[in-house]
Length: 224
Length: 294
Image (cartoon, rainbow over all chains, first blue to last red; front, side, top):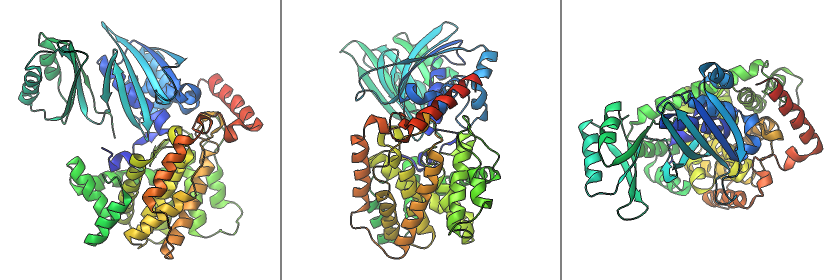
């Protein structure tokens, strides 16, 4: 759903809503997947991101996002220098993630590592600062960052949705949307749950503690 | 949010409301937020827009590459042409100003995008200041502009990488034209014609920035985009109508964008970016950016 405030916004550091603000948001989402500023980040730029990213500050914006800077944070201008001081070891590469008509022109694959966690995210910057995460650790997803989002992979067993909904309800968290997909019956089920309130550590831990949940990520809302 | 401007115009005229009102009500329903809260958020955006206009008019900013900067101040203080002393010239100066701030990695409101961020604040604040209209009127105009942009986003595109510059400064010109027409007393239907008149004038506009930097021609294209918006506002308020319905003009922009060669969609592969001088300047400036570590 398009919001007026997405169109009249975001307030951001220039020069490009897709290549700077959107890139920063993708960095913020990748940061969430490892729960903080990663120690290592490999950033593979595709299409227009690869061809024109440097002059747009795409590199600074993604690295800024990985450090938790939001798109209107003027520190983005100096993000590469700050990253070196903060111990974020980043590497940029140009790549091709698919055919021109299949992959959005502004797409990036970010591999982040922090402590014992490592994860791979593919996301696109759709224009006007809007983003879409399309893949996490090889699973197809659709995460916009317009809501606080919980992403999890669980065994496909009866009652799994009810159990998770109960945990969220106990924490006073209202579900906005819930999408469940699976590769095969009885195989792993992939759940993307968009919620109205920011889920706390406890909700994440409670869901993660369920024996049939393989992993769970919390992604912060990153829209304006 | 509305998917069709014709629907929004019909709803507004049937209930005697403005497009701003129906836009705010639709947003309130969609997002479950009170109208007052949405207007507050638009008011904050207006504050950032005014800040960028003032900052850019000082004239001391230079872009990351040094390719652009200082021209807004020339238009404000330099020798005059036929528009000297008119709100039109002031609007052009403001469009350059915001875009110079953007190119210098300063803070702007991407409305609808950063590359097209100069048009809307220039036209709305320039005309509001000339007519001594208060911020409430400009906030309403921003809601109308948001509605128009939302329709363009759903029917066509707001991304230069997808649709060329017609989807950025072109869309911005349509948003500014419709919003300012209403702000200056035009009916919802006149605002719709203003959008169509502005958007038709930017159909086919390519996105061809030197080196892919949002600098050249982007800074100047915001000024010319604002000029197209001004022409559309003048025509619409004079009662001129455009025979192709506004939604169909927007659809046409989307269709042209989809057919546009990738060289003309923010890849620096064609247009001005691919001229001998464009290539040389981009090479020199990108080298400079790398060397300075900036």
